[in-house]
Length: 428
Image (tube, rainbow, N blue to C red; front, side, top):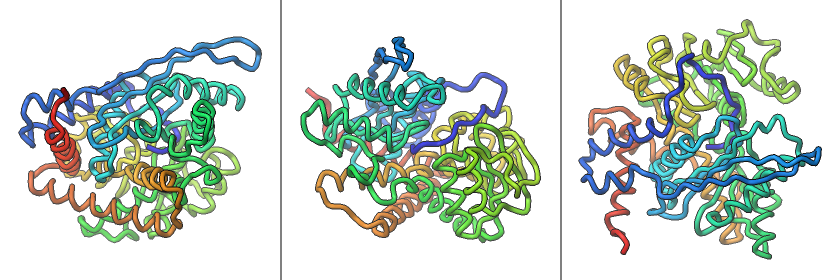
């Protein structure tokens, strides 16, 4: 997924283990597809998990040892693809889950990739720019055994950005002795980045939201929207949804949220956030609310764009939205999913809803490999076609199997990876 602002957990209970959640979701799809036990065993586990403990020299001259991970879930359909996040709560199980979700996300959109993910346990807000650069370059060097244009291509995620990718690309290039722009995606345009990449995840959120509204017979101008997380994904989603006529009535970031049932002037809100670094204090707000309260507002559409485990059995029964579009990875536990299904709440799953970022990352990788770049209009047009086609395919499968959109997406993705695995066979 692309960079998002983190949010406080929605429930006071211990959060669900994301890897257990990812495996349970896979198990449900495997049962619907009647996969044989051997194929289930192969696809249920990650292929590689790489842990590194590496020293970084801090500004005061001291040495601090950080722990980082790079996990590859599956490489059957192509090189591994997945972001790198910096966060105090990064764990191996979280990274394993995210790598599995990336496999399905790439398969849903039919990109020639497998899934990977990476992370470093740190609080980037407590590090200087020089310390962040030192950490990034050393981590890139440590995982250089795995990453590269033909093997594993990182991208930005939570608390990482274009600059982070530029440092990684430069580090790998220095070790190779020549520039390797296709080593990462989400780079600045000046070193091989793609037009349309910063807005790609938010644009994908817009495409699938419009698709869901068409399915449900809704007029965007009659739909109110609450967005949890106002980083790159959440803010771009707000801007694009507003431009399509949706009424954005609530947004939140790590500092808290704001609400106005009559809707916000979104361009003015974006200016406020850019100036002050938070949404709190915006003049158009009628009420300040918490991240957890935002999830229970009387709105038509909820867009969780923060971290995992925002919907659980503790709060799912209080959610009033009729449609949830998962811009974040893993915001809904299986227990909450069951409650939403029973209550008739439609959920557009993360492996489709936030796949716009990896889709345009694929475009960037292709452009870097051929040293030929496309205009932004072409990027956006290709992205829209891919996301619309994927949405229609999972909707059709969901109706065929009499199941949710999530299981429709999983059936599509798991079958594609299983078919590729079967035709390649087991080596040796």
